[in-house]
Amino acid sequence: MLPTGLTELDRKLRGGVPPGSLVALTAPPDTQSELLPEQVARANDSTYVTTLRDEATVAERLPDATVLRATSEALLSDPASYLDVPQGGCLVVDAVTRLERETETYREFLEAASRQAREADGVVLLHAHETAPEPPERWLTLARADVTWRLSLVVNPLAVETRLAVTKNRHGSALTEPLKLRLTDHVAIDSSRDI
Image 1 (tube, helix red, strand yellow):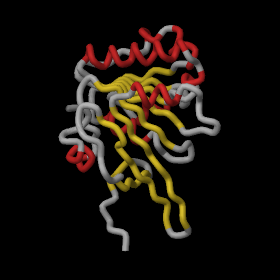
Image 2 (image 1 turned 45 degrees about the vertical axis):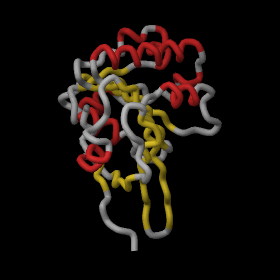
Image 3 (image 1 turned 120 degrees about the horizontal axis):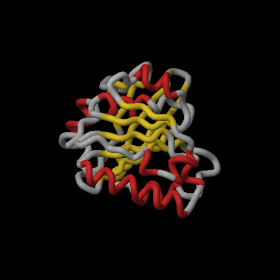
């Protein structure tokens, strides 16, 4: 099992994410959802491919990871150049939302990512922002993934709550209740009780 870097989540997942898994994380764009893939990357030997943020900024946050910058066009036309999963480690693609607008090339990209995860006995984590309208191939991301994580955001006058639901886990069990997270400058499980 590959650790997520969050002890409580790893415990609930019975050790972490099963090797060979393709993981899809969906989240509203106005959350600090990139902190979750960064946390997973920190906990493992990792490669982090960014399509949104500056490569130097990500490398500063993840000094022990290999960080690459790629356009969605480059990822779709030449996935082999970017989908290098470290043996027993993790590859993060942040974000795949623009890739999900293509049909055949995105399907090929997902197959290559899944194959790389299996061959390296590692994990590929795809970070997908929720948009309106939903990208046409989002269904494919969620259907193809072995594990799906859904981050949700609730803003009320007293607090901002972020919850993580594990809605699918083909090689383990999904969670019946979401975990409450604190996303500040890092990720933590919020174990406080609502009164």
